[in-house]
Structures are given as C-alpha cells and as structure tokens.
Length: 386
Ligand SMILES: *Cc1c(COP(=O)(O)O)cnc(C)c1O
Image (cartoon, rainbow, N blue to C red; front, side, top):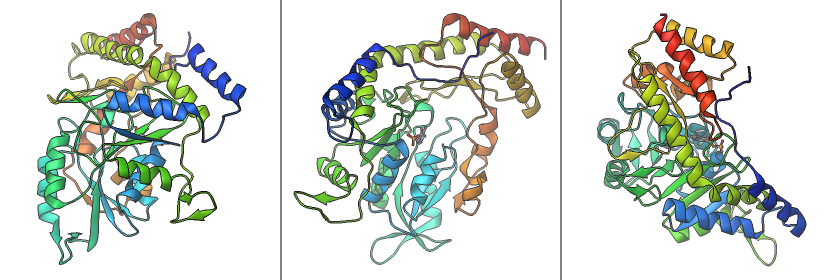
C-alpha cells in the first residue's frame, strides 16, 4: 500500500525548464528576470500594487514588523492559534507577542474581541503610544492570521487598528488565492501582508516568501532593508539591514508554479468539497469554518471532530497512520509552547477547546481520486464501528 502524504509539492516540466534557464544564463542568485516576473504575477493574483519577494514566510514577517517600527521590548498582538512562525517573527525583533484568543466558531481573530481587549487592557500615554497596562509595554502592531487560508474580517480589524493608530501586518502565509467579500487579499486596508512559499503551501519556491502592499514607498524601503541596506555604488549602508531577498532560482520555481496556480486552486477546492460531501454525514464531524465574508483557498483540507473526545480522535489517527496515511496533529496554541509560556495573553479558552479536534487530511494538489477515496473509506468505516 503506497503512502499518502499530507501535502507535498507539485513541480514539473515548466519549473524544470525555468531552473535550466537559470543555469544557462548563470543568473542563480539575487538578480535575475524571474524575481521581477514572479513579483508581477503575485501582484496580479493578490491585487496588491507592490510586492517584495523574500527568502521565507518567517523572514517576510520579521522584515514587515521591522518596517512597521516594531522594536525591542514592544508588544505585537498575535492570535494564539497560529503556526509558531507568527510569534517567532515578533521575538526576532526583540519584542514579545501579546497572545489573543480566537473566535470559538471561526478560529480567527475577532474584531469585537480585539476592540474589547484593547479597551480593557490598554491606555494611551502622553505621546500617543498604546500602553498595555499589565506589563507597561508599548503595543506597536497587530498581526491577524489568515489561518487555513481563510481571511479574518479584515475590514473590522482595520477599523479597530485605525481607531487605536496601530498598523496591521497580516500573516497571510498560506492564503494566496483567498478572497474577502469578493476582493483579492491585497485589496484591503492592512499596511502589509506576508506570504509563504514553503513546500506545503498552495504554491512553493522550495522555501520563500513575500511582502505585499499598496504602499510603494514601504515596499521600496523593505527591498532596501532586506538587501543589506546598501546605498550603491559603494559599500555604504544606512541601517542594520538583512539578507532576506529571494533568489532567481527560487523565483524560477515560483513563476512555473504561478502559471499553474488556477489548476492548483481548483484541485484544492475539489478536494475540500469531496471531504465535505462525504464526511459531514458523520456525527460530530464538521468541515473547516467558512465565515460569510471569506472565500478560502482550501490550502489545507480536513475535518473538525467537534464532539469527539480526544481518545476517539487518537484512535482514528492511529487507524489512518496504520494505513500509511499521514495525519499529523494540528498546531498547538502558542501560549502552551515552551518559548511562550510567559508571553502576555488574553484568553477565553477557545483555542484550547478547538485545536486538538482539528484533523488535517491529505490534500496535495496531485492527490488522486482513489487515494482520497482510501482516506474517506477508512474514516467512514471507523465511525461506523465506534
Ligand atoms: C507557513 C506559515 C508560516 C511560515 O512560513 P515559512 O515560509 O515556513 O517561514 C507562517 N505563518 C503561517 C500561518 C504559516 O502557515
């Protein structure tokens, strides 16, 4: 029986030809035509007018925070239900994440809860800074996460952020191709959005990321900052810069992947629909949340075993694994992770309630019908017998 992985890259001849052209032209590093072509394609797909292709999702988040003015000892609002890269990028600034709970229904940062949290825990000082009263630290930015490729209510979040004068950097790492109220993800009031092209995302550049924005000056500053902040022609550097740019080799993969993007998205949507149709008949088994403003890219498929106890979920996981189907546990909330046990937090218990009931299922764009049927049949058989 062949192994069915959770989510693997789908690379082919187009990518191979682009890679060969990097070798033929000797453009394998930071300069090269594929980087600007990839940036242009991302601009079209996201609706954001400006794009900086960078080395990873994590470095994009870090560079974005620095560009928004996050400094040592600041706080950045981060939802506790996210991948650890979101708070890590805050730590890389010498700052701390202020962990906020998610909505129990849609698993996302909720504007009303954010507003209530800021009113309860913060006050403005004489110079206009937003001070977190329990720690006395400055809150410098808000990082909503488009978890599972589902946009948050970004209009609502931006209303709150503008009221408090806080910039927004969206962790849209896995949300390429998602929509908010019919708009592309870059067509919003957030200052910056970060993308990732890591191996398990909807498109991959091996490793890679990008920052997108409608603020051209901000993206130009980010490009400068992430190429050692050098002012040419000599070696003058006007700040402590970073070496975070994407290489032409990565972008060559990315251009090939973007040519196939609509096929990838259709495949992801079809996989999610099939799981939904065949598995939501099971008692206590739901699809991932679909808030009314969101059109997800279905980067990751899976089920939410809302009413199942943890032992039953583990038993299903073992059964799938025994059948060579990869089903890892879902991200554990950040406030339970060793590096963040002391991070400030404002919790309701929602993330702790939902995370262990989320079961991602195989959803590679090259997953075959018979492979998906195998996954579905095992789950149906398990639920019929327990
Ligand atoms: C993948 C991912 C990241 C990190 O991106 P890398 O390219 O792996 O650094 C950050 N946040 C979220 C929500 C992600 O899914």
